[in-house]
Length: 95
Image 1 (tube, helix red, strand yellow):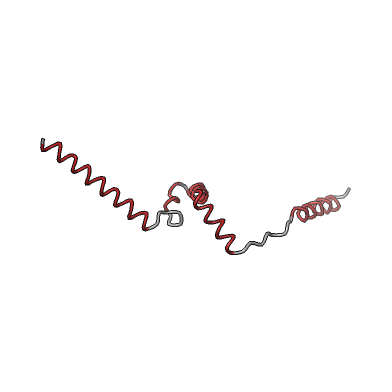
Image 2 (cartoon, rainbow, N blue to C red):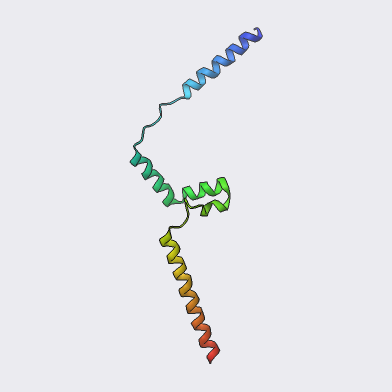
């Protein structure tokens, strides 16, 4: 075979293989996509993918970070724990 016919044969094989694997895209509604996204967030899949792509710092990038309510609850718990620890140490030192 000549170089041209070999090249043409390879090109035809690649084009036909690409057409064989091409599938019709699945049409989803916006509600379905949002439901899938929420499920991925709840399962931790989104956080894992973000961390995998951008390192551990991506876990607190705002997309997967804690909400303001969660942050406030965490701060309140830390403050209560510190106050409890302070009260416990005062009781020990005053004895």
